[in-house]
Amino acid sequence: MKLFLRGVMVLVLAAFVSECAEFLINMILARELGESGMGRYMTVLPLIFLIMMLASFELPVSISKIVAEKDAKYHQKMLRDVLHLTIVLSAALFVVVAVGMPFVPIFDSYPPFLKWMVLFMIPLVSFSSIARGYFMGKEDMGKIALANLLRRLIQLLLLVGVYQFFEFERPTALLVAFFTLAASELVVFLYLFYFFIVSYQNLKVLPRESLGRKELRKDLVAISGPTTALRIFHSLTHAVQPFLIKAAIIQAGVPAEAANDQFGMLAGVAMSIGFFPAFIAHSFMVILIPTVAKHHAAGEHGKLQKLLQHVMLLTLFYGVPAVGVFYFYAEPLTSLFFHSDNAAYYLQLLWPYFLLHYFIIPMQAYLIGLGLLKDAFIHTVWATIVSYTTIYLLGSQPEWQMAGVIVGMNAGTVLLTLLHFLTVCKKIGVAWASKAEPKNT
Image (tube, rainbow, N blue to C red; front, side, top):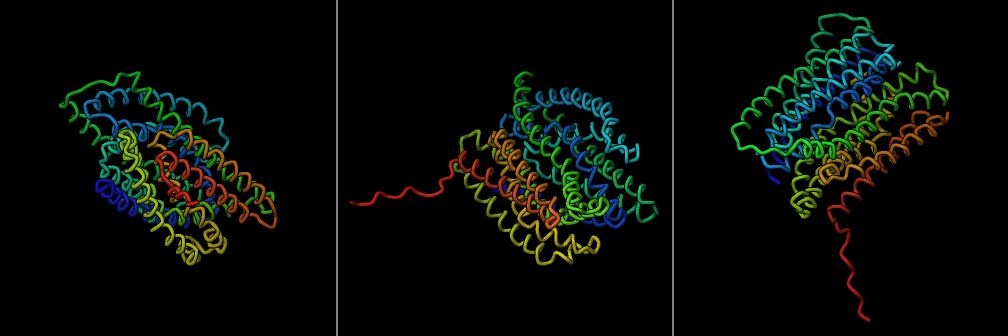
């Protein structure tokens, strides 16, 4: 538990600074791009993240789980085989994305440079993922924390420097925002892969045994396959979400330009503020996957139950005050971006969505560590169906509009939280109550 808490503290401190940087990044983008530009930025960003997620092949999750479960003598040959496999997969994805991009209409309204930037990031993300997974499995959270910190700080420094010394028109300013994203990913790749090569060389002096390529691929596919399917579904639904929300409120009578602006305030302002404390939940997730996998492999259900209790209490400890601040100080918080009564209203309505996501993120890590990836996927599908159906049915009503959209988002999150929590408790044997003693007759 001490090792777990120490790793969490390292990740949380670094993530806090990263989230502060992310907060400043979104403030700068909101002011430089305006409501319309922010809407365009947030519209294409989920699609970029989808491609980057595919480029990672969920290697951080699968490698960290295997490294945590296997002895160090297997690591060197395992990593060598993973490197070879990643080269093939990364090259294949590069070709598929390059061929498919001309058929994706959303890229037509952006400068051609954006397509090249996305292609450039594919190998960077792929090989960074190997290093990230290895350090996660070894519980070397210092390197993971610094990598996450570097990504945000580099992007922030570039944005401040470029926007401070140069004046751009809105389309060029939008392109600069994407460029800084790619530059930060390059720095993270150079940092992580350098230390990965050093660690890989150190493994050569240890006794080595091979898992066998078939066994390794089976283990990787068993973890990365369902996890990638879950992330693909999650990314696809988030890529569709902007268009669904806009279509719903346009159907309710909101003009198209106003719908774009409202979505920009929802995604770029309210969501940025509400997910600020989620860096703690993501820190839990990074360290929980290998920790839960290790305890589960050893059959230590008592430790898993105690760990779950600590994580839930810590989440409650920071989550409730956080959403309280968002609710009562919504107007001054959203005014940090630009003055908008709508953005403050959205932030207040979304408090259940944010609070429950603080619990969902570590519970999903539990499901991955326990090998319940199929359950996590099914839960997400059902929650998304409920959420998106409600979003459109209520959001398209003239009397509801964006308020109906937010009700739908909250509804899906409630369902997902319950499904995750009940499944985890059943798997690790959490007893809800002691059996009642028989009554004397």
